[in-house]
Image (cartoon, rainbow, N blue to C red):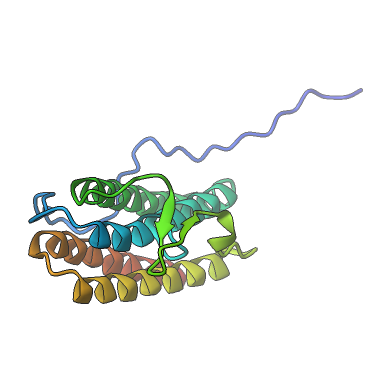
Length: 180
């Protein structure tokens, strides 16, 4: 006789909040429209190293961990939520700078590149997932710092500096998760 069994995921994400520094964000404003700056930020928005890539990679990792490693999955989701806030802030800046928000990263050579999941690193086990996430956070910080050197708008750079604080915090959180 066959029993009617169902599988469930008992990991509840109801109380999960964004994992980020407890600091306010600067106002979202720009000195003037600048398509070159908007194009740089489009790379942070949806390039290979971007908030879109981070969100997607974290959500994928969280989904694959949630049934067996619920506390870890909750932390990963909290980081993904912070990355969503970063994506939203970058989108506002791109718009104010006169850019287009369309999941196209506009390269320096003028060629737009559509975001693709090929940008993601999707390892099989939790330790390798976290290590890949740490590397992605470091790459994002380096890219933001390079963009800050090019952008001569202190309003935009203040937001990027604030995002970097969250990314550095994410590295600390991920390193602590590795030690558990």
